[in-house]
Length: 206
Image 1 (cartoon, helix red, strand yellow):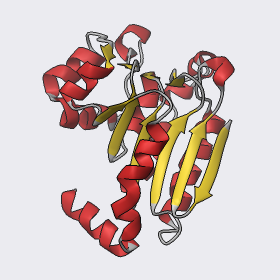
Image 2 (cartoon, one colour):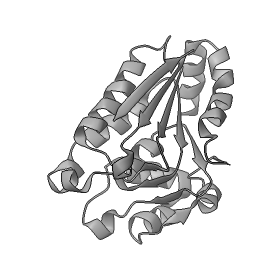
Image 3 (cartoon, rainbow, N blue to C red):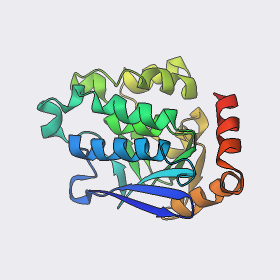
């Protein structure tokens, strides 16, 4: 349900559980975390890491049955977002569609976010009675500001793609089906540099 393609310095991890709106199980999250950790240990090979989804939805968040069984509070979420945030390479969330719930964590941890037109963004932890992943509120507030972060996390605001770009949650909006192509274009300068040069610039930005 997680596939990994490696080509010319670009690793592309795809969430593919389309019959369940790409909802995430612990095994899927573990696979994604292991991919990010492997990329960290292979800096000459993993120059860019792209996260995307198959079908019309990036991810509906946690599988609800798994969430009720304990996945909602599993440390695997932080393992994944922490591994992504720590990567020295460029990370791009190429969002093919809507991002919901805990799936926001990996998106927030990426360097750049591209979204297909029509995608929606929401994180209904207040309504569902769960706390967000520990690092997510600060990352969200850093992008959109504290008040808007509270609108999403506490008021249950569901925002559309233009609003997400206006707020700073999304960096670029593209026609559906072109998000991977756009991610490859954004990766060109990083791929042309040495891994240490790219990592050095990323470290300076923080």
